[in-house]
Image (cartoon, rainbow, N blue to C red; front, top):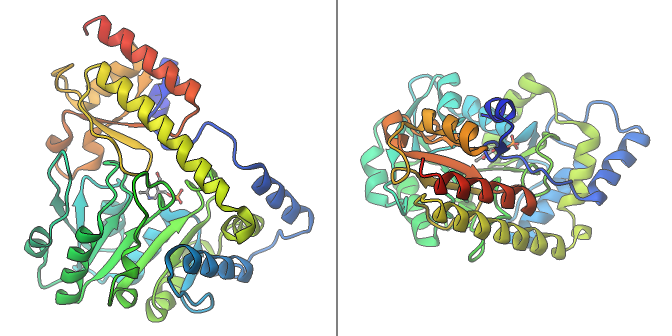
Length: 371
Ligand code: PLP
């Protein structure tokens, strides 16, 4: 859709990358590392400075005790992290439960690892996870469940009771929770709760995250995995053969980002800016006739366009890019059965307020034209 958007001269609210600058201090740290000749391979599973900074981050923010030497792997983004985890964990024919709608990489990751995704449909508009529904998806070959909270594309942030339900099923059926927490710092109401902090879960949870979203550096490609020692051993082997290591100077900047010197004010400001962007786009979409909830986290809005158009999602996303000048992602990208996303599109709000204001103005004009 980024290509379609560029061709149409549309405001690109499709792909989740910020159009505003990364924090100056991180750019300085990255340049400093390059000038100090941190330009060769870092340690395969991550520079010691970054792993120690991450251990401090998890302790300070969530009270999680993470051993920087045995339980952390640094990867080329959360994308490589998820692929390495799937390849490390699954044998052919193993099954993994994937709640849907889901971030589009999880299905292909499972298939690459020879595993079978078992999709668990969560019902709109709440997309709530209930232990009974999860139990129905567990079979003899089920090895793991994938969680993504705060969630792309729904904007849900699973509550403590929902996570407790997942943890109950994981303990009952000896499942691993693979949790993608790349939006951990974008939770608008209440604190982010890593499922690894629930009783009995640290030994059976693989927590994936990274710097892309929290520090607005999606192009730097630094991701992180926290896992028990035995699983870390397997994940590190796969990671070594896939990519050898993440970019060394950018790991130094990431170490600064996760350290105490970054200061809480940075995270407060990040959240308050995203909250304003969210509110602006939710209101603009509703005025234009879309039906959507208010995201609790992350930076996406999954919007129902059935009151505006009877087209399918692919065709509507293109119509919107060409005729309204605003590009979303077709909703079916987030479902195993395209029909489930037929009247949905996803918009991102990780853009400057001016970009979003322009998008909202264009959507209003489009709606006013009664298309
Ligand atoms: N996980 C989710 C849920 C995402 O939405 C994204 C990017 O959009 C990623 C992972 C990719 O993260 P990274 O840039 O660290 O590979």
